Length: 410
Image (cartoon, rainbow, N blue to C red; front, side, top):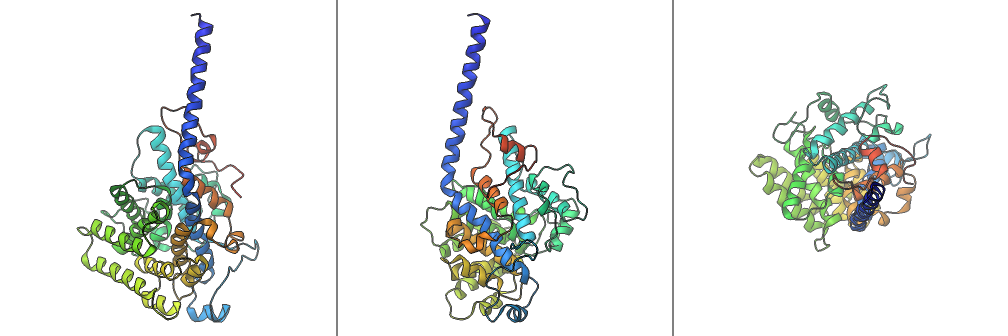
């Protein structure tokens, strides 16, 4: 065979290989498509609850009623300049959680080795921290494509614990906590983990729950700061990837049982008892007559992780088929309204799906296109692998080169 024929045959072989690899990538994406609606619902739903509660985060129930009427806030309070509903640091950090997860996955697929998920998320959080600092430059060296989004370079009442922990440059963990904070800043940002990974076994689910706790423990070292993140991860995971055999109430019980067993030897019994008591109270109050505000007050204010999760569980169980009623209930109290709204939105959004959320909540939400783009990335993940010839240039730009590019999904 002459050289020209040999080269032609080689090129033909490479072409067939590229086409076969692309076909496999498309098949993998197709297998994920059934989960897209719930993944979008979980991410966007959290942003909706966050945006509804953000204007009243630091208001008492008395002040909320005085300003919005006896039923409290019932609809978005739009930004004066943009006319859109703005979300807080809760959604900002959730987006950076997603970016970090996908950075790690991409590294693992293309390099053949991947470190702990929390390590990549920590990288993303440090870049989120820079967006909160005055004068930060989007052109500064970075890994996350989200860092190049100008609208994310703004302070939206970021939590003191998150800021102080990240400024140390160190990464906390459940075994080596940075502090003793049990604030809700850990649980309110962990949903993307559960939205992205599909557990194939009980062991996989356990690893995922543990990763949820570790992501929260990057900044929040008290067990009541990271246990709720593990429980929420489990609940959302069942909502998206479960077979539909469990009710939401059953999913909550399974999540708590699994997480309690996981941490029984490392977390003080007193802290486990507090978490169990709040979840039990939330379940009981969800089927008890009385006002939502009274029931939520009996649970707590939501400033701590255990209380924020319990309030979200209460609201989700109270209105399991009505996203709007659940997030409205979740924000109308004298506590951390945006975080309790966000976690409630994460839960019900992932269980009901994006299409089940009324359009009035979606149409005026800021950065909806960005949220949907990230949700789609969480759904399909990195479809490039070392040893395959398939290349997704858009994915390379975002998760290898760290560049945003436009347009986003509308």
